[in-house]
Length: 213
Length: 279
Picture (cartoon, rainbow over the protein chains, first blue to last red):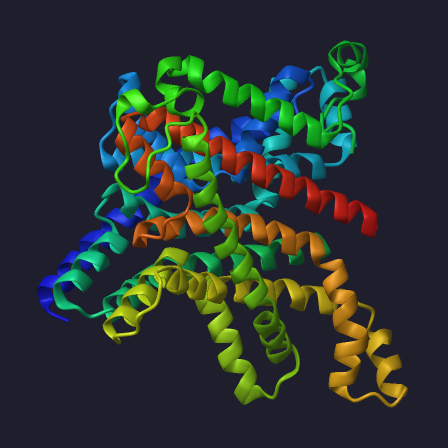
């Protein structure tokens, strides 16, 4: 492949990495919030959070991106393609993060909640100082799986003309008529996803030995 | 489970006042409908822009691709056509993937090393890559080879490939979850390995793995929307044709999101129902 095409792919890789990291950070914040609301003792909040999770699990990411990129300008909210991709990927992935956080919260022993409340901590303090720190340690492996899916999902942003790896591969294929450019793009995705899944496995291993002792 | 709240006993009185006695599935539906109801208000959607879904669209002109009937349900029928392709592609992919997935699961579980290593590499490699990449590669590769196929087939092939490796892992987990006594009993009755698999192990595995297989079908239905990118005329593409004619992208995409939601919500509930019946 010509050096020019390598340059395009590497630029795409940089953007894919940037999209992934930004969306991981934002979806972690939104997802934790929704996950906490998902087990809230206040029923209306719990219902809306449950609905949010159900909704984004049932709608394709492409539709979410189209709604943000093509639909929202009609409501006066104009995002450029990269901003649309970050917003779309974040609100979509937040639903999956929320489920992981909820499972982590419900896995914590009831005694912890009773002890925290007996010490006079409010619900919010209990979440912040007792439950969430434990949750985040336990949910590293499933969160990693969610974020691997996020890295792969950044490829969908090519549909709204974000010049990430997939779109660059399409451009190169259109120019060179060589479909193997997609496989080279695939290698670049592996560069991102394989270390991530190795990290997930290592975290899982550590947790297992930690629990065993 | 009745209710997912993490309420400590000390707040019982408060909790009783706010308790909502709704099963999880209904809670999810109610919540999703609230969120879906808030979206048009939040983004100030104009009811008039939903026109093609409720009124005669004769006045706003025709869409070039089909003879125009002028009936109010025209837009719905057009979307239903697209939905038909979406469901067809997803069904074909999952049905084609099942036999392949069984082969891959068995290769990974019990084949000799020279066969097992490529199977493991293939499964792990494909799972680490985006589905869209396979759709593009299959589509362009077949085109460059001069193979003339409807655009549906590259999409079906790519989705089948991806679903195969995911289902292979599901089936492998299902086989491993069975008590080893099942295999031992079958073998000691004089069955060969394949007879034991075919008559004893796999029928039980498929039964137990029905809920995750239905869940995978939901993922697949969502992934067929990626076929839009290579020009497959499924639900998303039909929505695009509609809103390009009507200039109402926000409202049309909203309606299509609703269609995906209803379909996948029902499938998700089906998976839960099957799961409860199996227990």
